[in-house]
Image (spheres, rainbow, N blue to C red):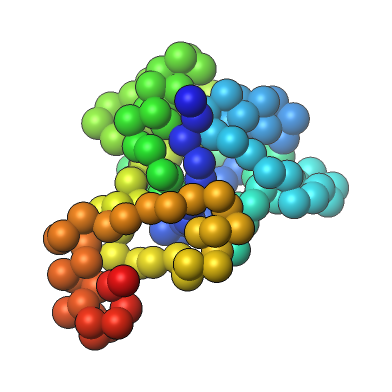
Length: 144
């Protein structure tokens, strides 16, 4: 089973080769390609997307990372290991030196609307701690 991408925390990802990156990430996540333009590919994340930009020239990053929200954190990390990525905690490093932190949807303090979750074929719940934080920030109706 592969983890489904649910959302993003922040976006910035350059890779050496877009086709290789799509193949690599396709071994870890279910990908839906939104489109391509030049040296870029756009991958859907429900009502969001991420751009993979080719021809990375800088050295691998040590601290900068991309935070991805998934429906199954453990499945994503196991698939990353199987794809040959170095995994430390809930972060893995891709072949181009990008660090990707994987966070479970149940633990994040944002919600997808029921319509977005339904369109993604997902029925996900939040932990009590995440619901409490959402309620503190946005009120009781926001955490449902």
